[in-house]
Amino acid sequence: MNAPSTLGAVLDKAVDLERLLDTAVQLIAVPSRTGEAGAALDRLAAILAADGFVVSRTAAGHPAAPAVVVRLDSGRPGPTLQFDGHLDTVHLPFIPPGRDAELLTGSGSCDMKGGTAAAVEALRVLRDTGALTSGSVLFTTHDLHEAPWGLGQQLDQMIRDGLHGDAVLIPEPLTAYVPVVGRGAATWKVHIRRAGAPIHEVHRPADEPSVIAAGADLIARLGEFQESLTTRSDTHAGCETVFIGQIHSGEIYNQYPQECWLEGTRRWLPGVLRTKVEQEFRGLLDGLAAETRTSIHCDFRFIRDAFRLDPADRLVRAFQASYESLAGSPLPLGAKPFVDDGNSFYGLGPIPAITHGPRSGGAHTTSEWVDVADLRRVAHVYALTAALYCAGRPATEEVA
Ligand SMILES: [Zn+2]
Image (cartoon, rainbow, N blue to C red; front, side, top):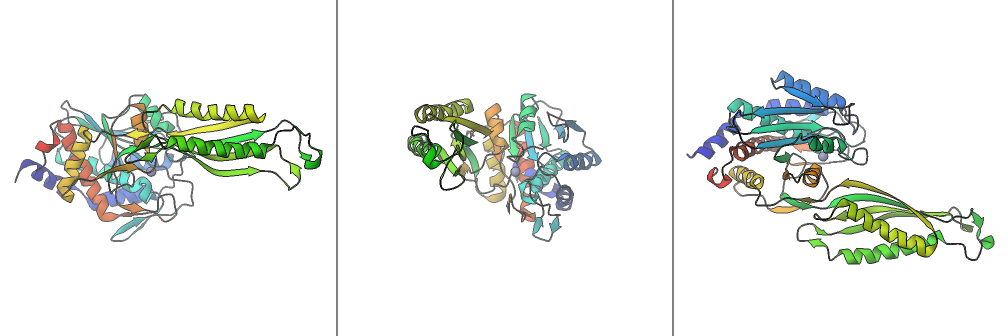
C-alpha cells in the first residue's frame, strides 16, 4: 500500500456522516433568505466554536450577517486552500429540514447548506487526522450571494480585504464536471421615452417620435449585435449573448404612448472587462436615441464577472487526483452554466476556484434535496484535495 492510498483511507475513516448531517440539518433549520442570513451564520459559528475551532466574524460591509471565518493552520509554511460557501437562500417560502436514509431536504439543502456542511466536515477531518502537513485551510461562509437580493458584495469585500486563499473550493451543486470557463452576466432594463404628453393618436403632432417604433428598432439592432457576438465564442461556454426577456408599451389601442421599456440579459466571455461590456451596450443605445429623437435610460446591473480556470493549475491537479482516487477516473472539463462566487474570485484575483458539490437538485425551488451518500464523498474529496494541494508536491506523485 502506498502513502496516498493510506491517506485516503485515513480520511475516509475519519468522516463522521452523522456529525455532517447534524450540521446540515441545523443549518437548514434556520431560515436565511438573502440579506437575512445572520441567524444561520450565528448557528454555524456556534457549531464550529463548540467543535473547538477558533471562529472569527467579519461584517465585510454587511453587519446584519457577519461572515464566519475559521483557519486550520498546519503550523508549517505552504499555500492556503479556501473552502467558501454561502448560507443565504433565494426568497421562497421556508421549507424545514427533512431526512431519510438517502436524501436530506429543505430550504438550502441543495443550494448550498448541504455542501457547506460537507466542507465543515472536511475541516474537522483534517484537524482530527492531522493530514494537513503544511500550509493551511481557510473556511469562510457568508450572505448576499443570491441575485437579485444580493450581488456578492459581501464576498467581494472580503476578497478586496485580502481575506482569501491561494485557491478555492466552492461546494455549489455541480458534480458532473470541472467547470473551466463561465460567462459573466448582467441584467439590463431600457426605458425609451418621448417628451410629449399622452395623447389620442389622431391628435398627435406629425413629427412626434414613436417609442414603439424605437423599441422595434432596438430589437432589430440587438439582433444584429447578437449576430456579431457569435464570433466571440468558446468551445465549452458557447458564444456571448444579448437576450431580450420582455417588452412593454402602451395603455389602450388608440393612445399614443410615452414610454416603451425592454428588459433582458447580457452574457460575455472571460478576457473582457465588465466596464467595456457596459460601454458597448450604452453606445448602441446612444446611437438609437439620437436617430429616433427619443430619450433612453438604461439600468445596467452587473451580476458577476466571467470565469476561467487553467486546467493545468495545481488546484485542478490536486482536485482531480483526489476525485480519481475515489471515483476511478478524473472528472471531465466543462462550462459553468450559472454564475457563482468562483467568478468573483477570478474577476477580483484572479484566484483559481473549483465549483464542486454533492449530487442534489431543486435549487431555487421549494423542493430542494441533497444525496446523503454524496455529502460524505464531498467531505472526503475536500479533505484529500486540501492535504494534497497544501503539501505542495505535484499531485501525480501523491496519488497512485
Ligand atoms: Zn448557491
